[in-house]
Length: 221
Image 1: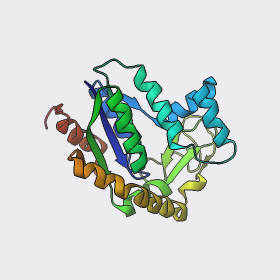
Image 2: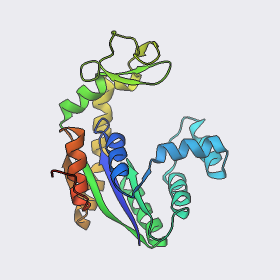
Image 3: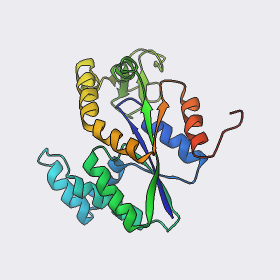
């Protein structure tokens, strides 16, 4: 049977980083809808062109188009494939559509991991983030500072704060996330597949907690 897990968490919760750790320790294929969307657009596939038409107008890509991209990915896997969704679904409607697609592929969602992080920690993580204009390397003013303030260690490029990482914008993003996902969280809780994970601790500990639930405990746990 095809299996799927979901990493759900607010901006700054570390979904992408945690996903990479889980991927390295299991057979789960990391599925990032954002990456797949960009790849579909770049490749000029029909679904990519459909998505591009919305993006060029500054509109959100409809759920139906996102699910088409996810369906294409699932079509590539065998009956026993294992997928890990990173930040998808984001809404209750997307969750219901994903369930339908998984049923068509004789699969189901086994676990949904809600990465819990205190709001002040999320704000600090995002508002303190700095990105290199040249190579895209990511730093944090306190947690991962560059050797020279404002300068990338890797290429010497200038570091900057993304417009969506200002404290005011971060607080708004967190509020939007809370509104969008409350019904989604309740949906998965009712199904008994939601696990709340403390993602405010060290990355390795968070990953180990998830792996233990997946039946793949790490050494020393």
